[in-house]
View 1 (cartoon, rainbow, N blue to C red):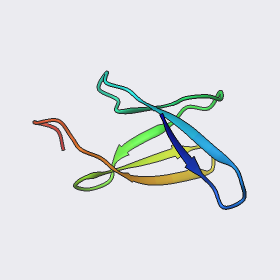
View 2 (cartoon, rainbow, N blue to C red):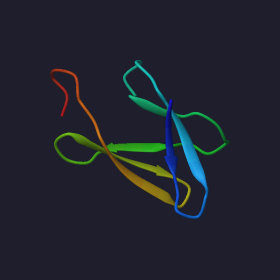
View 3 (cartoon, helix red, strand yellow):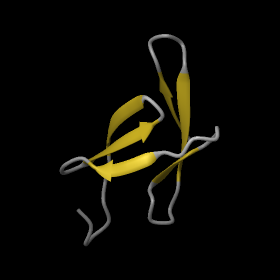
Length: 62
């Protein structure tokens, strides 16, 4: 489980998954958009929120 806290007291919870997606929204009805954001990072978007997180990629992936 990964929790990202906002300065205003809000937060988003994500589940780390091993099905090729890497991360998924843990609660709520919105979908999380996930993109590779350069070497060793992913960009997540959920509603109006945007996050850039470090990531390790499997062999053969970007």
